[in-house]
Image (cartoon, rainbow, N blue to C red):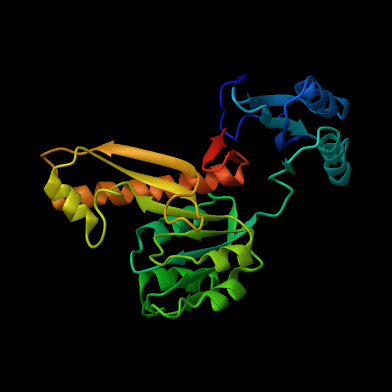
Amino acid sequence: MLSFARRPLSAAVPAGNLLGIHLFQCPDAVGIVARLSECIASRGGNIHNVDVFVPDDNPVFYSRSEFTYNPMLWPRDVLRADFLNLSHHFNAQRSIVRVPDLDPKYKISVLASKQDHCLFDLLYRWQEGRLPVDITCVISNHDRPKDNHVRRFLGRHGIPYHYLPTTPGNKREQEILELVQDTDFVVLARYMQIMSESFLKAYGKDIINIHHGLLPSFKGGNPSRQAFNAGVKLIGATSHFVTPELDAGPIIEQMVERVSHRDTLQSFVVKSENLEKQCLAEAIKSYCELRVVPYELKKTVVF
């Protein structure tokens, strides 16, 4: 495995240049890094950061590169064509190139149930410009009055709110599908409904979920109280891709925090919810920055 230190996406880029990101997956072969470097250098670009992973037991090449990009020297359509040619040359399964300052932001829809903490945290981060997404709508199976803080926020920013109550026999999936069909991916911000396999196939794009790290030991109602009463010492949160198997999709991000006998139930819950907010936001940010690649059946490479 070849790996250079991960730098923040905001790493300094010389004046007149933009930041380009390339994510690549192909069968392992001699000369891939050389050809990638040559492609970028031949157009006046300079690699700032590169991370490469080749599993010991599976000859597949994964890489993520950050490079300087000057649209005057390297027009956007030529950039796309150059990496497409590389993709064909190496029979790549995945080749994505983005210029965040030029390309449209990812369009997402957010689904949430009664709990607001993850939803409102995403809205706040979006408002602050800390998530590179555009939120097309919020969908919930829980009704919120118009003077609710979430509804007021959405109203101020012109983001539609769709209340779709569900029953065991009607999950409103067709209506949800119509609302999210033009998005790039969907976020489940503590949406307490199981998405059917038929819905996942019909949508056909990625869905990112968050859940607390108290599973599978503490299931059902009020898992935080169950865990608190059991005296657990570590709590966590997991963000993952949604698959037909419940809460078993490839993991994108996980976070943990220590709790102790000094914690009350209230402080225990606050710590747990804070972890969920941070974990989900980091997963979305990593996904948008092309840091996440599905690996084998249930794993991910996260650069």
